[in-house]
Image (cartoon, rainbow, N blue to C red; front, side):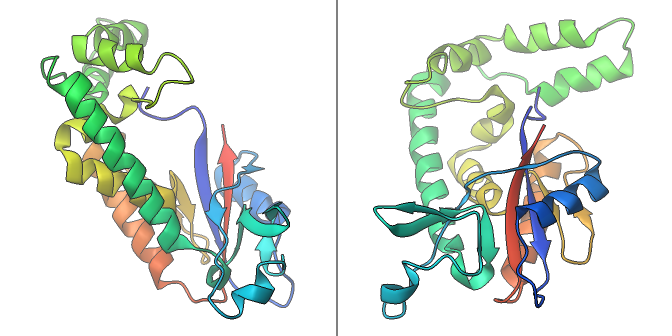
Length: 235
């Protein structure tokens, strides 16, 4: 349940004479995680005020860049200096803020407090014979608050998607939920450092996820401008 079916892995790559591509990142993911990765258009491309008049048309030092009306807009990754991480974080925070306010109005005020998935998972792991994983999932989803979150997110055209996986974050409050969202936009679900270290949450608990996000986002912000970030989705 709380571990998403599709996870985003952020691969950090040191600067080199040869510009890396998403195949380079995919090889690193296969080596470190034993799974295949596919590129995802995660990053906004940064255009500075003056030099942006030129670089907005250029895809150099970007990975898998896409254009809109000829202008380079997004990319799977690229040199840190070419990626708009601040814009990515601000957009994620704004969307999370609006989503939490909608959750607060439509769900929190109309349903009782619910136990997060981690609670049921701990019970299941404590005595797997007494409580199967299927039964644990059923008990979690039968809670009125979780039912409401699933119901209001049932259609893809719904204005907001309320993921039950994020129940603990929603219930922790607006600031915690917003912080978790913008940091996840930067750090994904797993981060592989340029030194080859794999950073990921120690467990599915919200506390461990927040610790990971803080550590990973701090690592990204400490990277040099000539290093690369590449985002891949893995199942």
